[in-house]
Image (tube, rainbow, N blue to C red; front, side, top):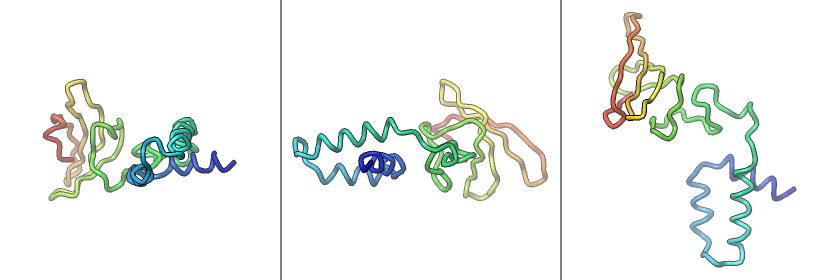
Length: 122
């Protein structure tokens, strides 16, 4: 149905697109109810497993996005576009927001590192 197609569109849209849809509508307007139903339908609709990124485990691949507390997943390969251009593999984030990750150095050696999320530069 058209309703289901719209729900899937919203689920697959980036957050900015969704905010733009709501920005153009006044609260109490006739279509506010419809927008609410669409958002609820988008929440209930499930992504196709083949649409989930194998690395970041999100429906919208986070390649090129910064690592945040909200998008952190264990086992993701994360690159820092800084001076070293090395890839890190996330291991865990503890309750104190300390991130542990492995890093493969240019000489092939592997090491683990722990850093407080607020100080994180991956």
